[in-house]
Image (tube, rainbow, N blue to C red; front, side):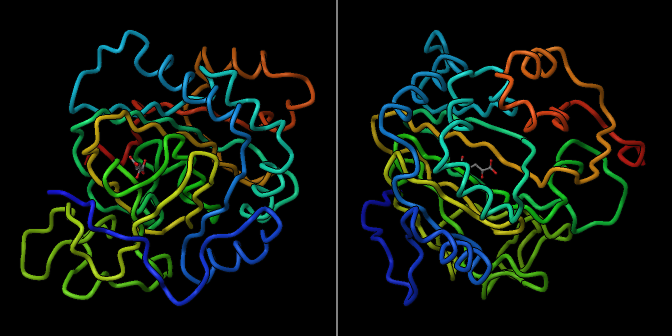
Length: 294
Ligand SMILES: O=C(O)CCC(=O)C(=O)O
């Protein structure tokens, strides 16, 4: 399927903002579940990030055509992304989006999608739909009211190039799914009414907003916003990375010990950035809570 016919939509409200319009951007996230902020990072840093994502995720270029890879503790392995924490325009924006003056690093990620890589299943990152005790790391890290997406598509976001798509207004608590679809039983995804409850893959969804961004732009979406990624159908790798924050002092009680790489990261980060990692818990993607057994 070719998505080159998809154009930037006119939604009838602004959803692209400059760094001088952060309050309006946050109002858009609250009203519609997403926003784009233009030119948040300098080009030189974006070029360094591109090299770092490649170096950490696929140093030998061995991943191969059609494959993608997600790194879930990128910040522990990439001193380059620490430079974002020193870039005040970026940090000012994150304080607005996380609605807090004092921030802790919640999690980080980088994704590499080679040419030919598949589209992504529609999903919400929010893990608070169920009130069960946490069964995995996502349940621990993704149950707070902070934005889920604070992404940089550092090779750009475009429907032909594995770009991001969101569903406008899907971030509200009582959202029931797009017209013609119903939520899966765990509410993590949706499927066409009357079909098996498997998360939907496809771009025929009412309310879909394809996001077009340049490499220095930030994509923000709310904790519950449903999103997907187009397949990569151009002959260039697609790279993205992001750091997510939570307000400092938020009790998380992560049940796993800090990994060796998390401890090394906390030790190595420059002194003036240490307040942002005092409450960093890292991530253990192999951790399973008791409730997962039953
Ligand atoms: O691969 C992408 O662009 C989207 C990633 C994503 O949706 C996620 O990590 O939750």
